Image 1 (tube, rainbow, N blue to C red):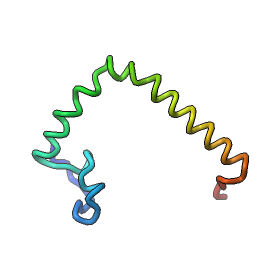
Image 2: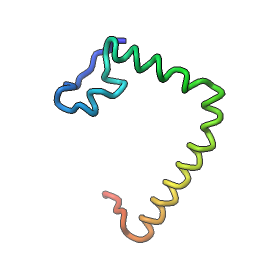
Image 3: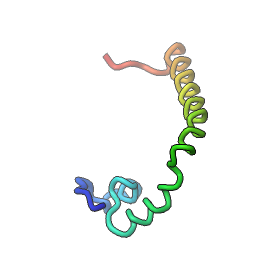
Image 4: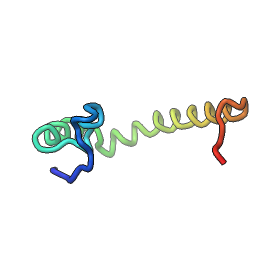
Length: 74
């Protein structure tokens, strides 16, 4: 629950309130709310959505690369 974080949550509240950084009661509350979302049945039902989104991102990246809008660092 209280993992060592090498990040000061006061510097950036967005990152400071993300689940890997939270500690104590806020972490416990978030975990209680998120655990039911990630059952194996629900994960299987989400697979199609994740696959579809990943394919769309890949197509956008390929198109941007072909049009020269995305440069690769050498």
